[in-house]
View 1: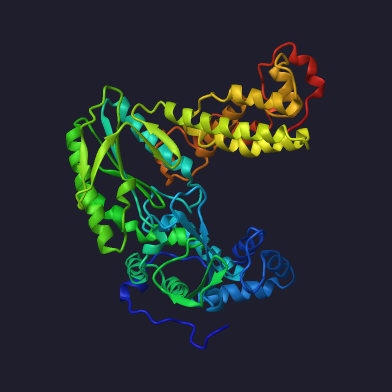
View 2: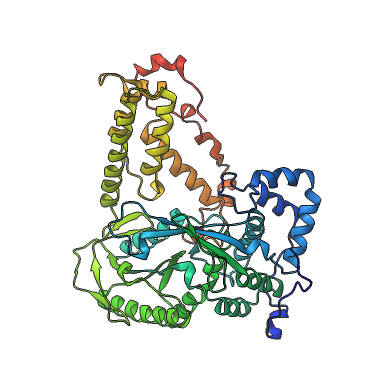
Length: 517
C-alpha cells in the first residue's frame, strides 16, 4: 500500500516557499472524524466491499490509527495507489431518441471509501482556505464552497439587474457553458496554476499524486474492460473535483477583469456569466463580444472548451426591447439576443417578473401531482401519512425551488387539491381545517417562512460573501444586535406558533393543533 518514496519531485520556483504562500492549516482530528461520520452510507461499493458503515464503526474503535494514517499521508503529500483504483460504469440516459451520440450516456465512478474520506478532507481544507484568502478563488465563484449555493448565484444576478433598472440603465448578460468540465482539466496546467497561486508544496504534490496514479475499469452492458491508467482528467464523482476545477478556471476572470474593469462575472461550476451595465446597448454588446473573445482565447490555451449551443445573450430593462443585437464569437458562431433564458434551473425574462418561471413550475407540479393522484387511486390505497410524505417529497421540492428569489404565491390551488385527495374530503370542507388535519401549513406561510429564514441567514454571513457585499451597510448582525432585534430563526420552524389569519370556523378545531417539526 505504501511506497518507500512518498514525495513526488516537482520543479518549482523558490517563490512558492516564500512567506507569501497561501497558508494551509494542519489536518486536525475533528476534520477526519467529520469526514468519516458525515459520509453517505448508501454508496455503491468498490471491489474491496468496504462501506462507510464499516469505516465508521472501525473509527469508533481505533480512532487514533485513523487520525495518524490520514494526517501522515496528507502532510507527507502522498495518496495511496490502491485508493486511486476505481470502476467507471456507463449508463444510458432515459428518454433519448438516438443512443449513438455520446451525450446520451453518463458515467458514474465507483471509488474506494477510504479514498473518499481523504478527498473530502482535502476539499474541506481548500474550501476553508478559499474563504480566508481571496487569492485562491474569485469571490463570485460558487459551488463547493461554504454558504454558496444556487440561490446565491441567481440572487446576485437578479440583484445586479434590479439595481441597474433602478438607475435606468441596461444590464446585458452573456451566458457561457464549459463543455465536458472534468474531462478538460490538464494536469500540467493545473499544477502550473497551483504554483502560480503559491499553494504549499505538500498540497501540490498530493494533487499530482492523486491525479497521476488513477487506474480505472470501464463497465458497459455486462462487459468489463481491463484496468487502464489515466492521468489527464479528474473524476466527476470525486469530492475534490469541483474545487479543483474552480481553481483551474480562476485566472479566466482575472484576464477579463484586467482588460475590462467595469465588467462583472458570476460562475457556478461550468456556468459562466459575463455582464455589464451601461445606457448604450450597442456599446455593451461590443464590450461583451471582446470579453468573449478573451474567454475563448484563454480556453483554447488551457485545454478548455465552451459549448456554443448553450451560449445565450439577454439584456434586462423595463422599456421596449430592441432584439436586433448579436455577438459573433471567434469561431464565427452568432449569438442572438433572447427575451427569456434559463440559468441554473431558473427562468429569467427581460423584465424579471418571473412569469415564465412560475408558469413552468406550475406545469411541472401539475404533471407530478396527477401522477401522484393515479398512485393514490390504486387498489392498495396509501394511508394519509404516506400520501403526505409523497406530497412533501415530490411536490414541495419543485414548488419551493429558489422561492427566495421569485416569491409569488401561485401554488395555492394545487396544494388545496392535494389536501382534498389526501383526506378524501369534499370540496366544501374548509382549507384551514384540512391543513390542520394533515399538518401541512398554508403555501403563503410556508414560503414566507423560507424567505424570512434566508433573510436572517444573510445577516450572519461573512463580510467577504458575495451576497453580503451587495447588501446595505446597516443590514449586518452587529447593527441588529444594537437595535435589540430578535434574530432567532427557530421561531419560524413551527408554523402553528405563528400568528395565522385563521377563520373563526377553523378556530373551533384549535384543540386538534399538533406540533410540526
